[in-house]
Image (cartoon, rainbow, N blue to C red):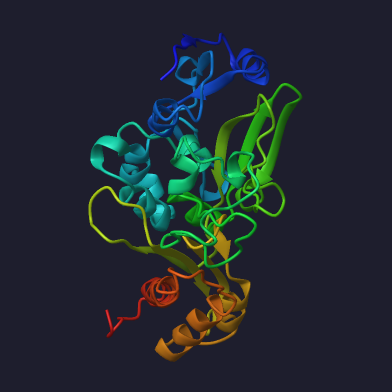
Length: 331
């Protein structure tokens, strides 16, 4: 690890100006950043300590049942918040299942969204892969057990955020503050595919900081669920995850549906074809089966990760049933 200094900005504008300059990185919880520093995949001369700024570590209720979540809220705070658990339980569950209690006490919401991929080729300091400015994604012909089955190419990383699929499913928006001012975008538009730029995972511009995540109130009669499958129960990333938000009309037909998968694509992967299967129909196990099949219809696995398809399909099916309050007899 190379030597660095830690600086404390006086306010948000100062932080944005500092981060717009070369060779500086933002410090929030520091969980992912510490790994990058150790591997010398990041070697800033200065870390801009966002914890010096006030007001970014709160969960606040907004009009109409919405929530405003500060980027320095920890995953543990998010998981334990009564307001989050009451209004957006899939988001609380996604935070509660991330990493370990120790990590959840440090890791922040903003850091979780902006973290870098866990691909072993990217994390290897001796390999100059496509994501680090090279000419080749080594996962294509190499070890790709945990890589993308949807939306991949030319890089086949999967985005590691637990929270992102839930926030996309709840139609959340993220506010970014930079040297040019503030802007708000949908969380779904925050992430970028490798075909746009293989070297980045999001649309953050130099100096921009996540300052808030706004989660609207769920639709009337809506229920949600988050499920994930992983190889071990402690300190592991999902093999596949699924978030569903389902709203019913007075005839108990599906009037609103969001289905988003995690750990299967370079971005949180929304499945509009699966949502279309649900809309206007009465929810049952057969319908959940058809929607799950539609969600994975476009999967294109690499040599060693086709096993992810049935796992992701099962996560989608079970999440639909759980959100609909229907027992899953196969679980």
